[in-house]
Length: 313
Image 1 (cartoon, rainbow, N blue to C red):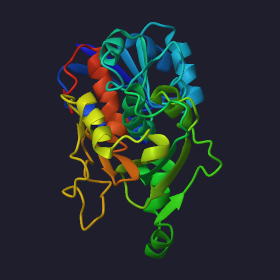
Image 2: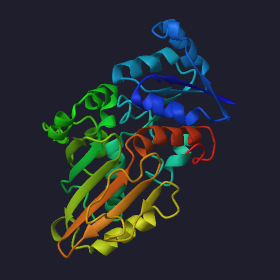
Image 3: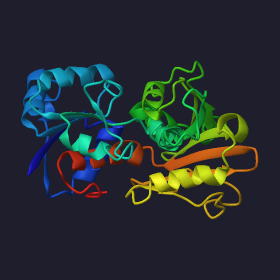
């Protein structure tokens, strides 16, 4: 039975992962004595004793945890500290056909960020198929529930009175275009140009939409939207957690609107292609705490341990 230690279990992602693992009988969760939680020696004991350590920590604390483990356990890091590091395997299993094997063999795995997963899985196959030039400047707009901001943002939103909640229903952020997810979006999507990323947080707990708009003639070399859809459908055929919906599907819309919360509490992602004669809109929908964070971590943990990826999901 594999032993797992979640360092940072009290945070939003840590709690979600612990909840998903709590009912598993094929794993043993190691827990630190609450009285010793802030003692470095106590943490180091568990970081070195576990078969896999899942790090749900700020970046600097994650780097410190890796140093404390001293190579004696495998690492699955949910922070941004190691996502573009050469010595770490990026934990997006659907990135390529080879990715699951690399994850299975890895000592160090970086769990992907929530926003980048949708962007990467939408864009990379089009670049690899030659439909989208790698040097094309791309834009990405996305919206997430407030749980994506961590415990402090969750507490802040839940403390709002009705008037404040209405006034702050949705807000743009990262307006200086330096969001911490941009490096991995750039690094793993295959694009040669740093994308413009414009995220928004909305007044609901979780659920996410990621949009990549494209001009057919100027950016897709005249490729028809149906061909774009066919490339994505072929690339993800047979995947357990990623589904490409029919082109221009009206079945997913509610009165013309797309609900970001439909896949909440799952590890599923839906990819969509909408378009007309001149323009194409690529869309990904998923749970920012599911496939976007804790679900992806459990999926990666399963692969690392040689367990079927769907286990516990």
